[in-house]
Length: 318
Image (cartoon, rainbow, N blue to C red; front, side, top):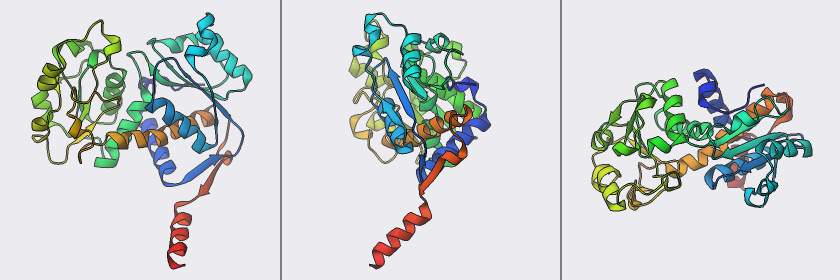
């Protein structure tokens, strides 16, 4: 069975299938009618990804298992494999893992009898983030083909940049990078635009934060970075009328983006977070189905859209 590790493993058809499933979860409420447990093994700090996985699990009726790396037996020398194997033995039906190593999945590959979902691997992969970004883009434009998407910021240290560039290219978008020269990675093979070119020509501007934790020291002064490579109020005015702003978070306000633009009309930053729940519901469900842990008969529609509309109508009449 395949784990959910990298965008490289997904075809365009599989990506579209997951986006379609996420949309069904957005429109209707579903529950899995059997008791299941999910272990969320996060070895790096996380707010959006971890909490949205927990909300996704609870919406599906899956019980999240508590885990905190700083108080776990890994502090006593336990390996990632033994930690994962412990949760499998205790009764976890799926593992969601975030780890600072680029290739942590190789330690677990083909060694467990439950599915593994990558919630972030070092600087290499973040497939569920790229799915929710694609979901947000599709909601806005209804297509990927022909869109000019610029990923701007700390490309060299970003798993989001790598996963998004690969996924969006598979879906037919034109992907470009932009940012400070010291943050570019020519080995990735995507064309690079100056930031002013990027702002004026993109349909989607995906900003990335400077990852302080992956630098020995901050490169350049904060003010200089914002003026040269950040989305200032003046630059936002030069964007296409229909262009949107994305950011995977956390946002460094006043560095990669002016604080007043985080919630402006063209910003979809908080919509991305909302979409993350439904995308992760889709990934969890798909993996459980693929591994035979559940079948379609175990997924029950709790309250259809038609039912909710009828209830609202009855309440209005009364």
